[in-house]
Amino acid sequence: KSLQEIEIPSSVTKIGNSVFSYCKSLQKVVIYSSDTTFGSYIFLSCDALQCIEMPQELYDIRINEIKKFPYRAKIIITS
Image (cartoon, rainbow, N blue to C red; front, side, top):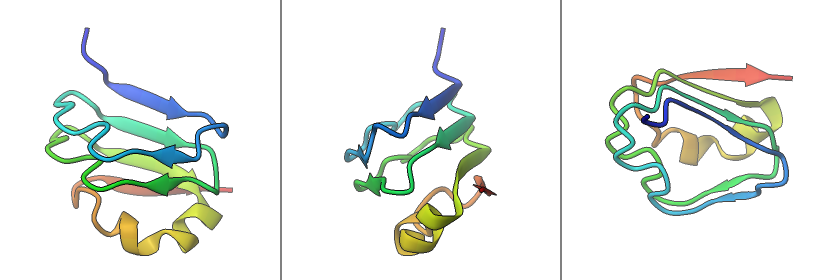
């Protein structure tokens, strides 16, 4: 079965380069840590990605990196 959803626990503070690239069935990603850093092209060709949930603080700190995420993916801010 293909990966459709992933929850990244708060213990993960770095998402490496291209880690989810070409996961064609990935639809949802939930990030729990406000300290997470992102590598390059982490969601490259994730055509089914619909939403990415993350804490407000992470969004505020990493806005320039988040702007590079797939334009179709809705960013959902959690508290």
